[in-house]
Structures are given as C-alpha cells and as structure tokens.
Length: 179
Ligand SMILES: [Zn+2]
Image (cartoon, rainbow, N blue to C red):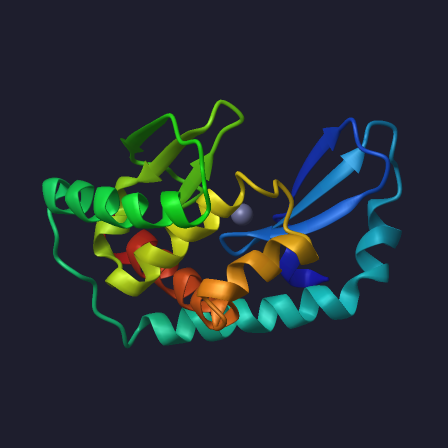
C-alpha cells in the first residue's frame, strides 16, 4: 500500500464506493458516510497493483518518446476537423468546443454538451488526439466507463487499451518536461 498514500478521496451521492485511476493517481469516490477506506483498498489490492504496474511502465516509456510540435492554431484546426467527422458518426449534438490548459485531464464533455479540450493535446500524435476526442464524444451516448461505453470505443479504436497507456506516458512526459 506504500505507493498509494497520495490517493484522492471524494464523497458523493453514490450507493457504492468506486475506485478509478485518473492520470496516474488513484481516486476513491465514496458514499457520504463511508468510513472503511483501508478495507476497500485492501479488497482491490490486486487491481490497484496491476494499474500501478501499467503506470510505472508508462513512466519508463516516457523517457523514450518525443512530443509533436504544433501551435495552438494548428491544434484547433486539427481538433475541429476530427470533431466534424466523429460528431456525425456518433450523432452527437455538440454545442461548443473550448480550448483550455487543464491540469488533470486531456478533455472533458459536459452535461450541457460542451467539449473542453486541453491545449496540451497539441503535443500528442494525431492518432491519440483522435482517440481522446472520440472518447469524449462517446460520453454523449454513455456517461460512465462501463461495458456499453467501451463497446462504442472499440468500434473505432479496438486498441484503446494501448492508447490509454500511451496517453498516460505522454501525460508524464508533458508534466515532467514542459511545465
Ligand atoms: Zn471518459
């Protein structure tokens, strides 16, 4: 349990506790009067260790990767083109696209059907930008990362697990080298 002392805990109006890894960090989403973190972490120890191993590999891989050099305008143009394609394909009723620097995610999709894109995406290879955008637009159909969601993802990005891993690698590169 030594490596997960920096996990983030959120209390929400949820029935069951949930564990997630967000950009390399463990996040616990707990029902409001939930007390037993220790037991919860213990119970999911194997899963946590597996995730930590993937993260460790991503960090090592980060040493060997180069980042793309686009400027903000080129990123916007690329994003708009990709969105145009995927928006039709997934029949997404997208409202607006915002570009911002974000500290914890590549992009997010809001309930108001706005897409926020992290400007740091400009450092990623095009295929990963495509994946991130497809992933976010798929949240229009399914909010949660459940089976239904990954099924939608698989139709376009059957290798999404690799892409998630690569994204993590790039996350570490960008955090370490560019900021
Ligand atoms: Zn998602």
